[in-house]
Image 1: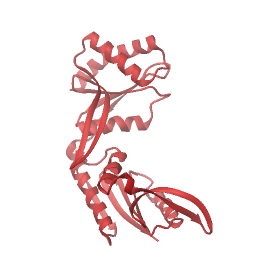
Image 2: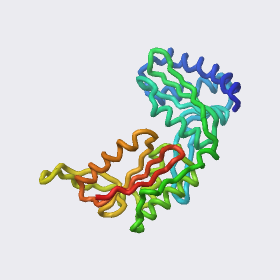
Image 3: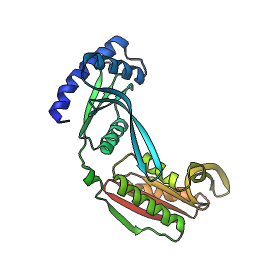
Image 4: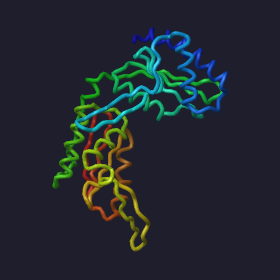
Length: 256
C-alpha cells in the first residue's frame, strides 16, 4: 500500500477510533477496543477487516506465531493498545511485524489516554538490507561441540530471517534447537565468598557453560563487566555471549 493510500485509509480509521473511545470510555481492555473498532470499520465498508491475524515465522521445524491486532485490506497493519502511553517496546513490536512482512508502514493506536494516541511507523529497511550481516568472531572460542552448535544455529537464523527482529524470537529459536526450555533454562547457585545468595536462572549450553544473547547497539562495553560479575559468582566456567547490534553480530567468549 502506497503512503498516500495508507494516509487516506487511516483518516477513516481514526475517526472510528475516536468514536470508539467516546462510546466506551478509556478503561476497557485492548481487545474490547479492537473488536469494537473492527465492527465499526466493517460496517463503514472500508474493505477487508481482519483481527488477530496470524504471522508465522519458521526455520526448519521451529515455528513461532504472532497475532497482529488489526489488518485492513491485507495491507494496512494496526497494533492497538490500552496503556498509559505508547513506549519504545510498542514501536519495536510493530516494527518486528513490518520487518517480517516486508511492509513499508504501520500504525500504533492507544485508547487509554485522554485523547486517542497514535503513531505512524515506517520500515526503514528492505529484506535484503536486513540480511547484510557482519560477523565478528575475533573473541569467540569453540573448544566444545555445544559452542560450535550455538554459533551455527545463530548464523542459520540470521541467514533465514535477517537481523533487527525481536530479540525474544532469536532466543526462543536458539533454546528450541539446543534441546528445549526444559533442558536449556536452568538455575545455578550464586555465592559471594562463603555466603550463599540463591539461585539464578540462566540459559545453559552445558553443565558449566551458559549463553546470553543481547541486542545492544550502544552500551555493549558496559554490559560485559555485568556478565563477568555474574560469571565470577557462579560455578560456571564460561558464558558465550552473542550481541546482535543491528547489522553487526559479535560472538564473545567470557571465561574465568
